[in-house]
Length: 430
Image (tube, rainbow, N blue to C red; front, top):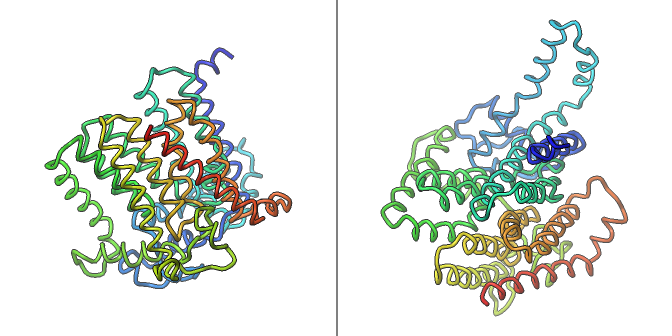
């Protein structure tokens, strides 16, 4: 017991890994089929002109719409089932004591399910990485204690929303969040400004979701490192961004990577509706079943999309004003990142339920420092989990799903999250 107490953090991570591994073969979401097909096509067809070729199998999207780093990750992990089988076969042949029935188990696993499970591993590793970065944050912000480390790691690693998203559903939203958190850690606590910028660029090369953190990140970068460093880092990060697209280009052209990113990735990343499954402000006015395009006129003949941009623009201006008004403190930056992420998910159109993960790491760090935020972290974590389950109810439990699918329930949850947002925002201004 003394050993476990001394190395509690290690055992928390081991338990978190075991929980996630136990879930990866149970099921996977429809979207993972795209990850599998893109990886297969990269191996069979090659990288050149990849974004302009229809996928060999079509699951909701005909053309690839994920950035290069995500595709590289799928490409690397795609051969894992074959590698694992070959390793166990070698052990079976050369070690008499090796249990041969393991080979039978591997042979009987559905091949598609095996591939899906392996493609969940990068997100699971990012879960662990993000938890560790959170621990490092807490050690910088307050006096290091084993109890604080355990609390921070546990609140993240056993968070049902993150477990469900990466280990069962098979989404990769935590990977760009991991890179963004790492870049912010480097920004706040080191002098490695260029590395921080490159790491943030890597987050955008996995998924564009972390763009909502960019305004706060850029302002903090400028205040800490000045104009000269921000120009240098911007140039180097753009080179990294550009070279990531190079294997996918048939002809080398300076502007093509940016065109692909904005037209073939960002524009094609979400369905064009007011809400794409998230419980947010627009759900109070619209409904899942109606599937209203966000270009539809709303007030004064202006579209839902326009009003979403306007609302978030006003909120972001207020958040950034509060941040730049005072000293550049870690807790102030974390607050700005949290509010920016949550404001975007609650008030922009075309948002998915998966994006509710974005504000949680920053709220966790706020909660570890000031316990008053803990109840909000718990509520928003459960809120994100229920929203995930509403969109993909696996395993299906009729009573739970029907309860969440009740318009009164999901609209009440949406309203509660909005009230929490404004309550916390007002507290920040006091």
